[in-house]
Amino acid sequence: MTHFDAKWLGLGMVLALLLPFVATNPAYAGDPDKTVGGIDVNHYVCVTDDHLVVDLDNDAATESDGALYYDRTKTVDLEELKEECEEAEEFFDINLSIEPVRQTRIEGYVFEFHPDPSAPGGWRGVASRDVPVVASGPGFEIFWGSEDNGFFYFDYLGAGPITFNLRLPPDAHPINPNVTIIVDGFADVSSGIYLGFYRGDMPPPDLTSITAPDGVPLPPANFTFDLTEEEDASLANVTGMPSVGGVLPRQTSPFSIALAVILLIVLPVAGAIKLRRSRSE
Image 1 (cartoon, rainbow, N blue to C red):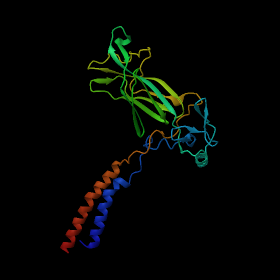
Image 2 (image 1 turned 90 degrees about the vertical axis):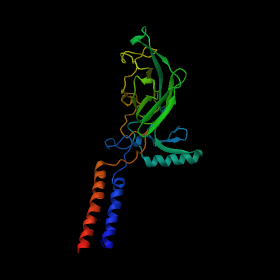
Image 3 (image 1 turned 180 degrees about the horizontal axis):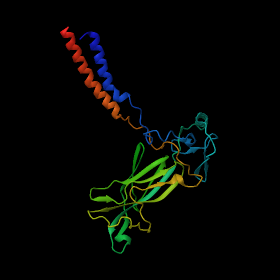
Image 4 (image 1 turned 180 degrees about the vertical axis):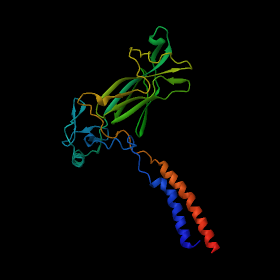
Protein backbone atom coordinates (compact mmCIF):
# COMPACT_ATOMS: atom_id res chain seq x y z
CA MET A 1 0.00 0.00 0.00
CA THR A 2 1.36 3.41 -0.93
CA HIS A 3 1.67 6.31 1.48
CA PHE A 4 -1.18 8.05 -0.39
CA ASP A 5 -3.53 5.05 -0.03
CA ALA A 6 -2.77 4.68 3.69
CA LYS A 7 -3.48 8.37 4.28
CA TRP A 8 -6.91 8.24 2.64
CA LEU A 9 -7.80 4.97 4.37
CA GLY A 10 -6.99 6.48 7.76
CA LEU A 11 -8.97 9.63 6.94
CA GLY A 12 -12.00 7.56 5.92
CA MET A 13 -11.93 5.58 9.17
CA VAL A 14 -11.75 8.79 11.23
CA LEU A 15 -14.73 10.26 9.34
CA ALA A 16 -16.71 7.06 9.90
CA LEU A 17 -16.09 7.26 13.63
CA LEU A 18 -17.11 10.91 13.76
CA LEU A 19 -20.17 10.57 11.50
CA PRO A 20 -22.73 9.70 14.22
CA PHE A 21 -21.76 12.84 16.13
CA VAL A 22 -21.75 15.35 13.28
CA ALA A 23 -24.50 14.08 10.97
CA THR A 24 -27.39 14.67 13.35
CA ASN A 25 -29.06 17.91 14.31
CA PRO A 26 -29.71 18.89 17.94
CA ALA A 27 -33.03 17.60 19.28
CA TYR A 28 -34.90 20.39 20.97
CA ALA A 29 -36.95 19.65 24.07
CA GLY A 30 -40.63 19.47 23.28
CA ASP A 31 -40.01 19.62 19.55
CA PRO A 32 -38.18 16.40 18.54
CA ASP A 33 -39.75 16.20 15.08
CA LYS A 34 -39.94 19.96 14.47
CA THR A 35 -43.74 19.96 14.22
CA VAL A 36 -44.23 22.61 16.90
CA GLY A 37 -41.80 25.35 15.97
CA GLY A 38 -40.01 27.99 17.97
CA ILE A 39 -41.18 29.96 20.97
CA ASP A 40 -43.69 32.71 20.20
CA VAL A 41 -41.82 36.04 20.47
CA ASN A 42 -44.86 37.50 22.23
CA HIS A 43 -44.09 35.22 25.18
CA TYR A 44 -40.76 36.95 25.89
CA VAL A 45 -40.54 39.39 28.78
CA CYS A 46 -37.87 41.33 30.65
CA VAL A 47 -37.36 39.87 34.13
CA THR A 48 -35.25 40.32 37.25
CA ASP A 49 -33.18 37.57 38.85
CA ASP A 50 -36.08 36.79 41.20
CA HIS A 51 -38.57 36.36 38.32
CA LEU A 52 -40.31 39.76 38.60
CA VAL A 53 -41.51 41.03 35.22
CA VAL A 54 -40.46 44.57 34.25
CA ASP A 55 -43.31 46.30 32.42
CA LEU A 56 -41.98 47.67 29.13
CA ASP A 57 -43.66 49.26 26.12
CA ASN A 58 -42.60 46.61 23.65
CA ASP A 59 -44.03 43.43 25.17
CA ALA A 60 -47.37 41.65 25.01
CA ALA A 61 -47.67 41.01 28.74
CA THR A 62 -49.44 43.54 30.95
CA GLU A 63 -49.60 43.17 34.72
CA SER A 64 -52.93 43.78 36.46
CA ASP A 65 -53.81 42.86 40.04
CA GLY A 66 -50.77 40.62 40.30
CA ALA A 67 -51.56 38.67 37.11
CA LEU A 68 -50.03 38.92 33.66
CA TYR A 69 -52.43 39.38 30.76
CA TYR A 70 -51.45 38.53 27.22
CA ASP A 71 -52.38 40.85 24.36
CA ARG A 72 -53.03 38.49 21.45
CA THR A 73 -53.24 41.39 18.98
CA LYS A 74 -49.78 42.80 19.66
CA THR A 75 -46.66 41.81 17.74
CA VAL A 76 -43.45 42.10 19.72
CA ASP A 77 -40.18 43.16 18.13
CA LEU A 78 -37.72 41.02 20.06
CA GLU A 79 -34.70 43.19 19.22
CA GLU A 80 -36.47 46.32 20.49
CA LEU A 81 -37.55 44.45 23.62
CA LYS A 82 -33.93 43.51 24.29
CA GLU A 83 -32.85 47.15 23.87
CA GLU A 84 -35.57 48.36 26.25
CA CYS A 85 -34.59 45.71 28.78
CA GLU A 86 -30.92 46.76 28.58
CA GLU A 87 -31.91 50.41 29.07
CA ALA A 88 -34.02 49.48 32.09
CA GLU A 89 -31.13 47.43 33.49
CA GLU A 90 -28.83 50.43 33.24
CA PHE A 91 -31.43 52.86 34.62
CA PHE A 92 -32.38 50.75 37.67
CA ASP A 93 -28.85 49.33 38.10
CA ILE A 94 -30.13 45.75 38.48
CA ASN A 95 -29.64 42.54 36.55
CA LEU A 96 -32.33 42.03 33.90
CA SER A 97 -32.70 39.47 31.14
CA ILE A 98 -35.04 38.49 28.31
CA GLU A 99 -36.69 35.08 28.63
CA PRO A 100 -40.01 33.35 27.92
CA VAL A 101 -42.52 34.22 30.63
CA ARG A 102 -42.35 31.78 33.58
CA GLN A 103 -44.97 32.90 36.08
CA THR A 104 -47.30 29.89 36.45
CA ARG A 105 -47.82 28.40 39.91
CA ILE A 106 -49.26 24.91 40.42
CA GLU A 107 -50.52 23.67 43.78
CA GLY A 108 -51.82 20.33 44.98
CA TYR A 109 -52.13 17.77 47.79
CA VAL A 110 -50.81 14.29 48.48
CA PHE A 111 -53.03 11.69 50.18
CA GLU A 112 -52.34 8.19 51.45
CA PHE A 113 -55.33 5.88 51.13
CA HIS A 114 -56.30 3.14 53.59
CA PRO A 115 -59.11 0.55 53.49
CA ASP A 116 -62.27 1.91 55.14
CA PRO A 117 -65.64 0.29 54.37
CA SER A 118 -67.48 3.44 55.48
CA ALA A 119 -65.67 5.68 52.96
CA PRO A 120 -66.60 6.19 49.30
CA GLY A 121 -65.08 3.35 47.33
CA GLY A 122 -64.14 1.58 50.55
CA TRP A 123 -60.93 3.60 50.96
CA ARG A 124 -60.23 6.78 52.93
CA GLY A 125 -57.51 9.29 52.15
CA VAL A 126 -55.44 11.15 54.72
CA ALA A 127 -52.95 13.95 54.09
CA SER A 128 -49.38 12.68 53.82
CA ARG A 129 -46.30 14.72 54.65
CA ASP A 130 -42.71 14.53 53.39
CA VAL A 131 -43.66 12.74 50.18
CA PRO A 132 -41.40 13.83 47.29
CA VAL A 133 -43.48 15.24 44.44
CA VAL A 134 -41.71 15.26 41.07
CA ALA A 135 -42.62 17.78 38.37
CA SER A 136 -41.00 16.99 35.04
CA GLY A 137 -41.18 18.39 31.54
CA PRO A 138 -39.05 19.00 28.45
CA GLY A 139 -35.53 19.36 29.76
CA PHE A 140 -36.21 19.64 33.50
CA GLU A 141 -37.14 17.70 36.63
CA ILE A 142 -37.79 19.35 40.01
CA PHE A 143 -38.79 18.00 43.43
CA TRP A 144 -40.80 19.29 46.36
CA GLY A 145 -41.76 17.52 49.58
CA SER A 146 -45.38 17.67 50.74
CA GLU A 147 -46.12 19.63 53.92
CA ASP A 148 -47.98 18.54 57.07
CA ASN A 149 -51.36 18.83 55.36
CA GLY A 150 -50.13 17.14 52.17
CA PHE A 151 -49.81 20.48 50.39
CA PHE A 152 -47.20 21.08 47.68
CA TYR A 153 -46.57 23.79 45.10
CA PHE A 154 -44.25 24.72 42.24
CA ASP A 155 -43.54 28.33 41.28
CA TYR A 156 -42.22 30.07 38.15
CA LEU A 157 -43.12 27.43 35.58
CA GLY A 158 -42.95 28.18 31.87
CA ALA A 159 -45.19 27.25 28.96
CA GLY A 160 -45.54 23.60 28.11
CA PRO A 161 -46.60 20.22 29.53
CA ILE A 162 -45.64 19.45 33.14
CA THR A 163 -46.13 15.91 34.48
CA PHE A 164 -46.53 15.16 38.18
CA ASN A 165 -45.57 11.97 39.99
CA LEU A 166 -44.77 10.79 43.50
CA ARG A 167 -41.40 9.36 44.49
CA LEU A 168 -42.49 6.49 46.76
CA PRO A 169 -40.77 3.77 48.83
CA PRO A 170 -40.87 0.16 47.57
CA ASP A 171 -43.94 -0.77 49.67
CA ALA A 172 -46.04 2.11 48.31
CA HIS A 173 -47.81 2.38 44.96
CA PRO A 174 -49.21 5.43 43.12
CA ILE A 175 -52.93 5.58 42.43
CA ASN A 176 -52.82 8.18 39.67
CA PRO A 177 -49.33 8.53 38.16
CA ASN A 178 -48.48 10.82 35.26
CA VAL A 179 -50.98 13.63 35.79
CA THR A 180 -50.01 16.26 33.21
CA ILE A 181 -50.91 19.94 33.15
CA ILE A 182 -50.31 22.10 30.07
CA VAL A 183 -49.71 25.71 31.07
CA ASP A 184 -48.90 28.92 29.23
CA GLY A 185 -46.30 30.37 31.60
CA PHE A 186 -48.45 33.30 32.73
CA ALA A 187 -49.40 34.02 36.33
CA ASP A 188 -52.18 31.47 36.66
CA VAL A 189 -52.67 29.22 39.66
CA SER A 190 -53.97 25.69 39.30
CA SER A 191 -54.88 24.36 42.74
CA GLY A 192 -56.37 21.11 43.97
CA ILE A 193 -54.23 18.64 42.01
CA TYR A 194 -54.73 15.52 44.08
CA LEU A 195 -52.11 12.76 43.99
CA GLY A 196 -52.72 9.54 45.92
CA PHE A 197 -50.95 6.34 46.88
CA TYR A 198 -51.51 3.19 48.97
CA ARG A 199 -49.23 0.72 50.73
CA GLY A 200 -49.06 -3.05 50.46
CA ASP A 201 -49.90 -5.51 47.72
CA MET A 202 -53.69 -5.08 47.77
CA PRO A 203 -54.81 -2.09 45.65
CA PRO A 204 -58.23 -0.44 45.92
CA PRO A 205 -60.77 -2.53 43.97
CA ASP A 206 -61.94 0.49 41.97
CA LEU A 207 -59.43 3.29 41.62
CA THR A 208 -61.98 5.52 39.88
CA SER A 209 -64.40 5.52 42.82
CA ILE A 210 -62.11 6.78 45.59
CA THR A 211 -62.13 10.47 46.45
CA ALA A 212 -60.07 12.96 48.40
CA PRO A 213 -61.21 13.88 51.94
CA ASP A 214 -63.24 16.78 50.52
CA GLY A 215 -65.18 14.39 48.27
CA VAL A 216 -63.48 15.43 45.02
CA PRO A 217 -62.41 12.50 42.80
CA LEU A 218 -58.74 12.10 42.05
CA PRO A 219 -57.71 12.76 38.45
CA PRO A 220 -57.17 9.43 36.70
CA ALA A 221 -53.73 8.10 35.83
CA ASN A 222 -52.16 9.43 32.64
CA PHE A 223 -54.66 12.29 32.52
CA THR A 224 -53.93 15.70 30.96
CA PHE A 225 -55.37 19.08 31.96
CA ASP A 226 -54.93 21.71 29.25
CA LEU A 227 -55.19 25.08 30.98
CA THR A 228 -54.37 26.88 27.72
CA GLU A 229 -57.86 26.06 26.40
CA GLU A 230 -59.47 28.33 28.98
CA GLU A 231 -61.27 31.43 27.71
CA ASP A 232 -59.72 33.71 30.33
CA ALA A 233 -57.74 36.50 28.65
CA SER A 234 -54.77 35.78 30.90
CA LEU A 235 -54.41 32.28 29.45
CA ALA A 236 -52.63 32.25 26.11
CA ASN A 237 -52.61 29.26 23.79
CA VAL A 238 -49.24 27.55 23.64
CA THR A 239 -48.28 27.88 20.00
CA GLY A 240 -44.55 27.34 20.31
CA MET A 241 -42.03 24.99 21.79
CA PRO A 242 -42.41 24.56 25.57
CA SER A 243 -40.17 27.05 27.33
CA VAL A 244 -39.83 24.98 30.48
CA GLY A 245 -37.03 22.96 28.92
CA GLY A 246 -33.86 23.43 26.93
CA VAL A 247 -31.81 21.63 24.33
CA LEU A 248 -31.61 17.87 24.76
CA PRO A 249 -28.44 15.88 23.99
CA ARG A 250 -27.86 15.10 20.34
CA GLN A 251 -29.74 12.02 19.18
CA THR A 252 -27.99 9.72 16.72
CA SER A 253 -30.21 8.54 13.90
CA PRO A 254 -30.26 4.82 12.96
CA PHE A 255 -29.22 5.77 9.40
CA SER A 256 -26.08 7.49 10.65
CA ILE A 257 -25.18 4.50 12.84
CA ALA A 258 -25.72 2.05 9.98
CA LEU A 259 -23.67 4.18 7.59
CA ALA A 260 -20.84 4.46 10.10
CA VAL A 261 -20.80 0.68 10.62
CA ILE A 262 -20.74 0.08 6.86
CA LEU A 263 -17.84 2.47 6.43
CA LEU A 264 -15.92 0.88 9.28
CA ILE A 265 -16.33 -2.52 7.62
CA VAL A 266 -15.88 -1.54 3.97
CA LEU A 267 -12.86 0.71 4.34
CA PRO A 268 -10.57 -1.85 6.01
CA VAL A 269 -11.69 -4.54 3.53
CA ALA A 270 -11.01 -2.23 0.61
CA GLY A 271 -7.62 -1.42 2.08
CA ALA A 272 -6.77 -5.11 2.47
CA ILE A 273 -7.75 -5.81 -1.15
CA LYS A 274 -5.66 -2.87 -2.32
CA LEU A 275 -2.73 -4.11 -0.25
CA ARG A 276 -2.96 -7.63 -1.76
CA ARG A 277 -3.09 -6.21 -5.25
CA SER A 278 -0.03 -4.06 -4.56
CA ARG A 279 1.91 -7.07 -3.27
CA SER A 280 0.90 -9.24 -6.24
CA GLU A 281 2.07 -6.58 -8.63
